[in-house]
Length: 296
View (cartoon, one colour):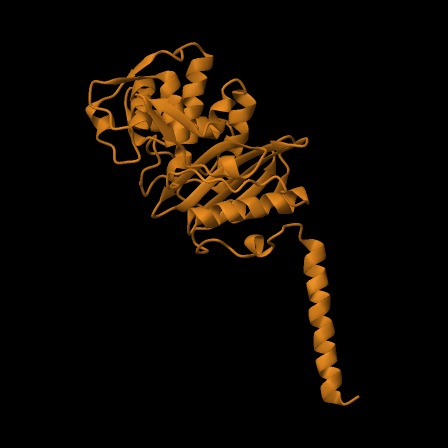
């Protein structure tokens, strides 16, 4: 055999071996979804944590500073659930909407100053609609002012181990001083389930009815993958597309955070591929059903 043919044959064998190696080491039906970063490096971060043990199963830029966007509302909800648990509010407590709250930019429910929203509807508005006006109304009601409430959010984060998070508002709207990490958001996701199991089902809602109108949500993972039961999506131009996902099925409980994706589709594909990799199996029960509303 000529040296040229030997060289060509050797290259083919190497390529074939690499294909076998990659196939054997990856458990996803679409391995490139995991191996391809879905965002610019300065925005991307991801982590997968076993919610039972706290074991970190995957991490990339997990402690790098990032903008939380509407993942911020996870802490707003944490403090609202705490108020419910302590009896300071009930699900029917009316929350007034101030002029400041009503003036927030979309996404919102378009309240007028002086109107009210009950706590149960407010929770749905935050988990499903990610309503900024409602987030501010909750903050003002519980904290006296949004600024005071944001300080409480940061302090509560420290209590549950969020060492690198600073909150400046209740909604996640852009603020250069508001930052977090994928690790901290995973901790918050685990804390929400651990401390408020009686309220956690709110995160599974995909729609709710408000003033006779059906409001659909942004979190398409809830309809794409059986076992996903939360938690929250987020987007601003500075942050990119973020998501904190909770998975509970087959005896496995996971919390995943993906931050900074270039699009909602890339965010969800990457999240799903990370699930497949960690679980060691293809998600055969995937249902490609999308909400009508654009993802945020």
